[in-house]
Every structure is written in structure tokens, then in C-alpha cells.
Length: 501
RNA sequence: GCUCCCAUCGUCUAGAGGCCUAGGACACCGGAUUUUCAUUCCGGCGACACGGGUUCGAAUCCCGUUGGGAGUACCA
Image (tube, rainbow, N blue to C red; front, side):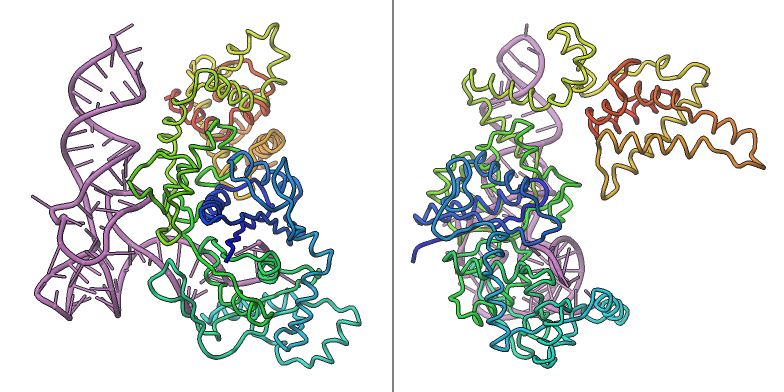
């Protein structure tokens, strides 16, 4: 059998380190067996997927050196006879619709007209009753002729799979001692075709894996729960299912699934920081896997040679930045002086790209850059008490304001949707000033009035500027805060507060 | 809540019933080299989650408990 494997990322947000991790395993497995490594873009969520994000994925794979044999054409990679490799293009070809219709015709799927609101109240009821939360199959027995009529009348609907109601699903995952067993009655009648006519992951992935002749699906274990649906779909569609193998998820230090709140997950970040792709790959290779001789540093070529799918450890490994840095150091020190110079210049360039326009106004020649940029790269800044306390204020007042601002920014930064950029920061701080400078029209105490009076642009801006940079002068405040970055700004605000003790 | 998965030092791992007094790496602590620092070298700390079986013998097999994780979407 020809080995053909794929990775199928969804182009939302930045290219993810998890994609690199699963990609590496698939790549090694393919190359080890002389097979093909395919990239497919799963952009069936029209609200979240972007072309830019897809481009970033291609670029990231190229950067890492995980070049795909088939996939969207990009810089010498891709092409192939099983395309198109982007699912939105396949939707236009009517590929998924065809299979959904087949399932309907076979009686293996059905139309469902339940509205989002109805489903929501159903779930609320199930939650309240401590019942499993799943679709109650209310349209499963609905008359097909009736359904077709409503469809023809233009009523919105989805198509759901009609999975068995009894019996057991059993599947042997080669990495697990015990077979995976699930009762069919616990398995949801999942949506296959959404009301916008686009397929969900389940349909699209199964259909494409078959059409692209994928032999092994090596994916993260978050998919294990939907395995029965995928196997069942293969069966009903008359496909020979690929072998499914589930590997552990990358974890944060607290063992939860890796997330950008707790770890840098964007491959663009690692690139911008100046991590070498060889080092990142080598580090990833050590997670869930090991060199047979216990060696820890080895190139991709060598990994291809010893890679053994059966030796993968399924427990989700913690992504340990300290170890990555160690490996990165090993690789970096091996660089020729010329390459190292290049790497440094590249890192400096990308790190300070946003800074040049800001600093340019305040410079007279290129050599001024280092002195001007210092607060933007320094690990810590030194605060002078006399700069930290704006004219006319008491030390204690300044301290209180800084601590309040510190808390405010921290709260802002920990928000789910928080974006640390110039407009957001400006809106936040101006909002705070507007709000806190108000006092009740009647009944305000003199103390309240005194505090409210401190919330002036002049005072607050000055405090933030000095606390964040250690200086009285800087580029425009909010650009400055944005450029310095969330973590250092919060740290420095904390330090400034302490300084005023 | 319900379903499924997982379990060796803080972290990544080696370990396929006797080679285990459990090996390596990162981190941490000490020391040597280095005018300093980094590198490098040497040493130290440090784990089989717990309880029952099976067996002459269990980190390894089985069961239970506990702990952790994932899924539970018209997201992937």
C-alpha cells in the first residue's frame, strides 16, 4: 500500500504550533515509508476562515522545511492530482453535496429543521436534568416527502447523519492497549451539511480523505470522540476507511490543551523571535517520541530514518519552553559567524519593524536608534521617583494611580478578546479617565472630588509614560505601550508602584 | 453532568515480567575551566499516583480508586 498522509489545518488566526507538531509526525511517517505528505485546507467555516491565514500556513510549512508533496501551490510546494486542496473550492464543485444526497437517498441521513433557539432550550433542559447534552433526534423519523417539500419551499435546514441507535462501536487504535469502545446510543446525529449548504468537518474530512486516497490519518486526540462518526461515514459511503491514529495533545504547563493565553502558539512568533526551524522541529520531535539511541539532537533527515509510529507516547506532553531554548542554543552556536550575523539582523529587523516609524521622527541619524529604542528592548527600566510623581501630586497619590492603572491594564489584558494594540489601549485609557473623573452631582465628599480631579489626561499619560519607559519623553504614548508589549508594560507598572513605597 | 482517553523525577523521556539499587535530557543546586559572563566539564537533588490481584518474580499484565486531559457546536 502506498502511504499517503495529510494534515488538514483550518485557516483561522495564526499558523499553530500544534499544526507543526502533527505535521512533523505525518511528514516523517510519509517520508519513512516513501509515501506522500499532503496539505489540505479545511476552510468550511465561512465566518472564521481567511485567505491570509491560509497563506500563512503555507509559508510556515515552507519555513519549517515540512514541504508538502501535494496541496495548494506555494513557492515550489504543492500541486498534485487529487485537488483542489482547498475545501471551499471543493464546495463550489458540489463534491460534498453529492455525498450528502447519497446518504439521504440511502436513508443514512435526514433533514432537520430545528432552529438554533430550539436547540438551545433543549440543551438547557438537558443540562438542568444532568442528562448527556446531545441532539434529541427530533427530526430523525420525519417524513422524507414532507421534508423535501419544506426544503423546496426554501425553509432553512441542515442534514444530519442517522447513526445506529443500538450496539457498540469498537476500534483498535494502534497506539492504545485497549480498543476504543463506545455505545452508538451515546453518539450524536451530527450535522453533515450546514444551513449555508457547506459541509461540516465530519463530512468534508471523510470525503476528502477518501478522494485524496489518504491511507493513514494521524491526528490529535481531540478527534478521538468523533472517530465512530468518521468510521461510520466511511462505511455508509462505501469507502475503505484510512487507518486512524490519535496522538496526544500538546499541553500548557498546567496540562491543559496548549493555548495562546499560556504559551506562544503562533509559528510566526517563533520565527520572529529568531528560533531556527531546525531547533523547533527537533524540540517537537522529542515530544511523545524519542531517538532509539537516546540522542536528543538530530536533524529532520535522521528523524525520518528512525521514526516509528508505533513508538509514539500518547500521553499529551507539556510544551517546555526552557528545553526548546536549550536546543535552540545548541543549534544557534553551531551557526557560522556569517549565518549568526544574518540571524541576528533578521531578528532585530522583525522585532523592531513597528518601531522605526515611531522613532524616525525623533532621530537625526541611524546611529541614534540604539539610544532611542532602549526602553523598547530593555529587560527592565529604572524609574526615577522625581519623574514618576507628576507636578503638584503627592507621592502617595501617584502610587495609588499607578497601582490602579496596573490593575486596570492587567484586567484588560486577561480579557478573552483583548488585543494589545494602539487603538484598543487608547480607547481603554481614555475610557477610564472619562469614567473616573466624574463625581456624583450631589453628595460627593471632598475626598472623592480630589481623587476624581487626578484623572486628567496630563497626569495619567505622564504616569503611564514614565512607568512604562522610565523616561519623560517617548513616542506617542499608546504606540509606545503597544510596541513595548503587554508583559513588559505590566511588569514595569508593577515595579513603578513598588518604587513609590 | 455525561462519554471517551491518559498516568515513570518539576518537565520531556528510556523501560515490551527478572538486565531496575529505574537510565538519559531540560530545569534547579553545588564545583572545575573561563580576567567576567555565556559555553564546556564534573557532581548533587529528584519519579514508577494509590490499593488489590496474577506470577517464583511486576514500573511492565488484570481490576478498582484517585488524579489529569479531551469531547459534548450549523468550529475545526
